[in-house]
Image (cartoon, rainbow, N blue to C red):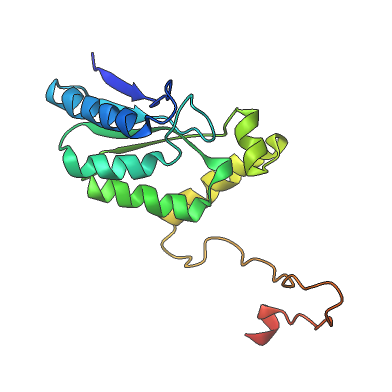
Length: 174
């Protein structure tokens, strides 16, 4: 049997974030000394239910102060992230921890988080699947230096009444 620690770093007392983070990190160090197999940090946004919006940042810190406990995300909410950036950050934490990262991913479920990020909940599954595809290709595709299509050039915002200038496609300029 393996024992694991799940950390959501809740905030029952407003204004005590620093202490709650310190307590959670100390618990992880104790868990490692006691032989726990892993620690998992949840990701939540705009909520006292969980005050860790960037679990990979916390795990990068823990990679430097622990040696054996596995470090996991529970979960990285893919519809909120740039998949290339998340793939790079996860790879960095995995390197810093000598291969101890367990990357848990999910599509999210809390309406308040989607609403505040201005991401329609009905796009969660599509965004999750697309992010998984991009991340997997970023980690595994050695032949294709461009694992995704270049974005379509868009006209920059302009002030009302400003003269309209033609937008030349980046593909035509290349």
